[in-house]
Length: 397
Image (tube, rainbow, N blue to C red):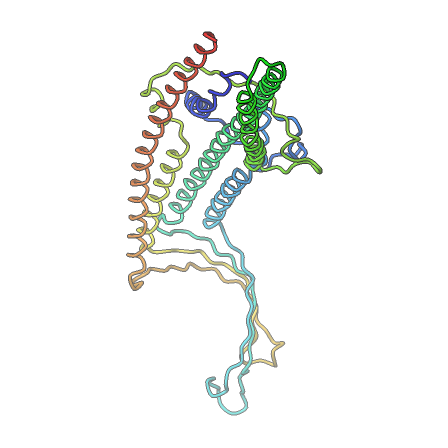
């Protein structure tokens, strides 16, 4: 490994993170249930593109975000079902003390036991717009969950890239330490030969032996860091090693990239505001909160349902429980909440608070993104200077 490779690790993460901001359109989210046509083990040879592809498919973080998106999407379906008809099967039985039943004189004894059953259809007609607001609020929450899943995907891609480069650096550091030890051992052998030939001193031999032995602990530490770096890469990807394999059996394939991107800090910040999924998620959450506020306010309006059904029930004055009546019934049922002990007022205030929270989250996120972009741009500039300096040193050498 040459000196140039050693100077690249500080540049890799910052350059690739900023490179993602140049995208003109967001990367589409893969389907929630991607076909598992890849063996669920870490391959023996691994390049950067393969590592990112495996992480996008098998990372638990991405899987969790997609499951949350699926959950929110199903809640949207649940919210839409509230405006449709509901069919219920009714049934019940009871027994009443004879002292609570009014009769018609001697010889006419009413039944103290009764039953009823039927099928009922209930269709919401008017709920003051609250049902529609609930559906729209859940639509926005589903979109926010989708943006969160996209953000998780981008985070895992960046984390995989950083882990891959860290593993490459650790691997190349081992090669540097091995080469350094080899050179020191050659110098020790040369000093010993000179001493035996009478052209060197015993001090030179001792000095070479100390230098050679001192180079062994850094080599051992470098090998340990290399194994741990591969373990971290495996953790980010989310796959186990193949049976009988370990970190030392994984071969990292590929060269260090040298991306050069020409844009200003202002361009980077504008791209981040346009394409960062976190901002899109906060915006959808704020709009969902506004719809929740509408629904809470509309809950004070009357609620009207159309009810129709066919019912069966036992006769109160008949020949036992087997003597029954049956028939259909159609009607309209209206409810107007008059006093809820402060429940509606509390729901309205909660919804107003959620809207304000979303505004504060958006403001804080914008400020955080501005700082992140400025820091990444500064790191990128420093990395480019390091690369130029390293190249100049290599050319001079």
